[in-house]
Amino acid sequence: MDIFTQLLIFGVATFFLVKSADLFVDNAEKLGKSLGLPHFMTGILVLAIGTSLPEFATSIAAMMKNSPGMVIGNVLGSNIANVFLGMGLVIFLSRRHITFEHNIFKVHTPIYIIAMSSAVLMLMDGQIIFWEGFILMLIGFAYLWFLFENQKHTFLGNGERFKWIY
Image (cartoon, rainbow, N blue to C red; front, side, top):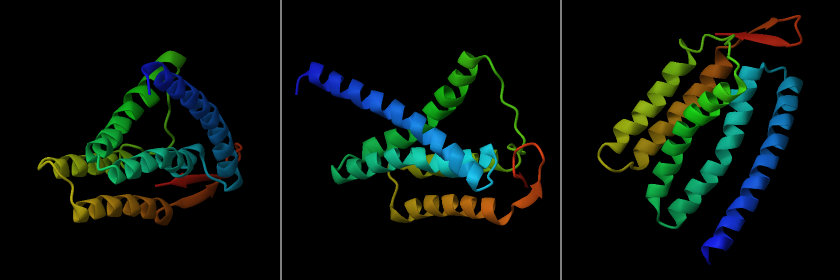
């Protein structure tokens, strides 16, 4: 396949990806509202997991094609891109700021640091083996369990059904 055809396919796929992302976010917001989730929880549960599914599929395809380097590049690259582009560039271009209702530095940031540090430490020997993958998966499930187990609901009168206090 020549470079022009590859660029054309890439452009068309990117167009459909952006359009489907708009549809996905709109419906995720509606789903979150119908479940009584605040925007932050909708972001963590619905959007983060939903937007990770293409990365998951890409990683599976890379492993099936015996390209494990693509898996590492995909995961680490998407995390870096999410921080610098998804948060940094969007905030810069919109000229807005983000205010957090939840104590993100006491709860969510340490989990992120643990997850990324664990992955980096596991990569130091040049490989991630089965049980290390299992540990990373357990960290993710423990985080989801924490979110559900430690929530306390309080009714709000400002349009959000519940405020989740950690």
